[in-house]
Length: 289
Image 1 (cartoon, rainbow, N blue to C red):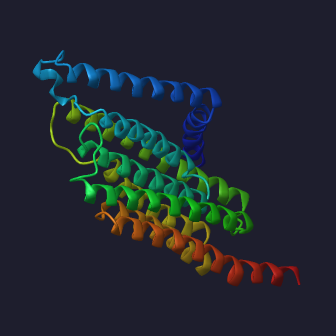
Image 2: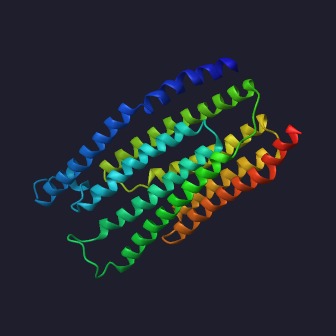
Image 3: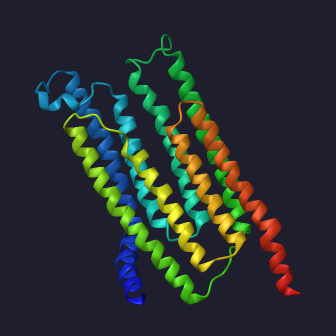
């Protein structure tokens, strides 16, 4: 098993290192700006009737599609970052998923603009405007709760493992992260081909979130092998439940998605506070005495 753990670490660590480099982020940011501007230009060319071939039927004629597409790229980058945070603690991984939820809500708000005429008008778009306000304020509230969640997590401490167990546990999570990364790339390529071919398809980001839930459960079960205590099992399972609530929020209709997302954030905060104040601290004080 040690050989397998070493191979997984040998593959994962360089990928993680290159992804987290600042120069990579800068290049991606510049590419995102160029993508947004280029998409706007292509849409305008299509509006002028200069792309009449049926191959270009997939290109929209509404400039607001460029905003939604840009946010989709941002989400893809955040999901990749989420995969790389999987080997970290449960709490950090859950926090990253709340970051993605807030971005998805913002993207949903901008996505509503695709149904608006140009220039923007209020008449006839009242329901869409309410959905924009709901998703926007929902993203803001989750953003605020996420800040409080990180404050609470900074004060919390988790059960420690023996160094050998910790290495094996982290290596196992790195293996799961690699499988998720390759699966995500495969799903993204298929989604891109379906879009170019004009075939109807579901949002692969939402589909991938289902896989994240299954991976969270798998990590909880693996953690049970190294942290068999009831408190650790309940805490890890609780975090997995909060990610499940996030997934349901993504599939829920407008307004309900915000309520479920807020409920998931409050649940994660309460879980951390209760675990820290009623279980971890008393046990630590007992050890000191």
